[in-house]
Image 1 (tube, helix red, strand yellow):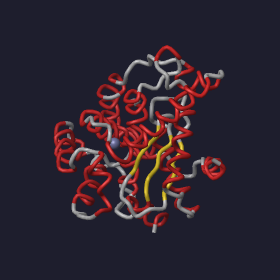
Image 2: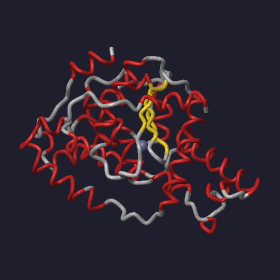
Image 3: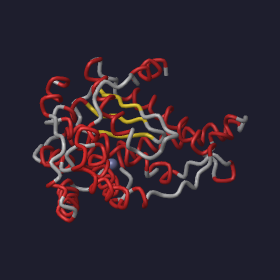
Image 4: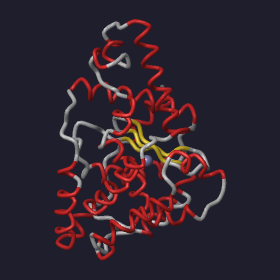
Length: 285
Ligand SMILES: [Zn+2]
């Protein structure tokens, strides 16, 4: 927990410029589409202030557990850069009640994952396959999608009200006793299994996060083909490095196919938005 709290200090002031400001008029019709396609489809908040508090606390505990599995990368420059790219995306996301944290993990495994409440992790192995800033943004945006669309929260049925289930953090906080504590810990273990062993078991949720990510890239001024391009690089890797990712997500070939359909249908490949290969190389190499 101690190691984790020092990481939260990485939420530094932004020094990277906002890309959507730079790309100006050309993105306007696409951003309008983003609002039509994604924002209007986001679930209407059917959760309470207490549910949000629960989600954030749950995410915090889960993040600590993840940091027990993989250590954070000791590279301040790279951590700061990843966090800044993530915060640029977060400015365009739609859950203002959340503070996002972006953390690089020191492992060659190729993966990225998120917790409820807004903790986003990317591995050094995944970063090593990235070719430009838009691809980095794409990976983070997919994870922001899982948080915004509340996939894990729904999967494990995490709510604050005692009546909604025993996995009630609020019950623990108000002295729910050992049964509630063990139920909460069980929910943490269950989510660890979803993240590292089983996946969400929902192609629909994964494709929704890919679609969300692509529109978030547009809205933030990044090349909307970046997620597809990144998948194309890692689809060529045949090693244990991608085992967890391929086991917990739909096949990359299907995700590439879905993204291609979406990009073609919306003419997103004509958007000519920022890739920022040089800026990525300056900060990540
Ligand atoms: Zn995913």
